[in-house]
Length: 190
Ligand SMILES: [Fe+2]
Ligand SMILES: [Fe+2]
Image (cartoon, rainbow, N blue to C red; front, side):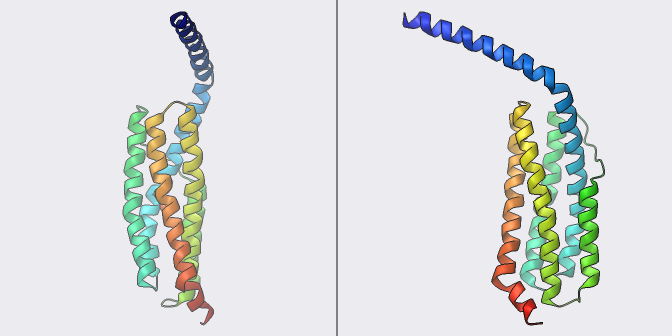
């Protein structure tokens, strides 16, 4: 009785699974294409950040902020590597597609450096704000992409994206900490 029941339940499960995979396949084409495109977009953004973070570090007044940018630079290089792994897991070659959002965010970062005075805490407040805009863009992107990867059944890709997501969140928290603990207060006295 219990065996029959188990068999019945397995058969029912198989039927559901095959139905689900059929349903998934039906949508996969377009969603997979969209996902692939978005990976190209964040790949461009990460490579752009590898070029930009050293500039933010160089422009920083406080040693701590410089250190935070430099250590996130090392993580960002790893984000680029992870995305290359994502491309290869999809059987695709790594390809970057210009991300207009990150192009704008980094352009704003450059103008912030120009508009603030070297050696001041106000410069650091501005750099933190610029850095956090980039991190929040990455957090939104990786959060969404990890979810899509799971929907598409790409568990290994989802794990890679989630690993990066947690480092983006940590970088954001570090910047918030610097603003709260010292930089904003010092700037308010300038
Ligand atoms: Fe990143
Ligand atoms: Fe980041």
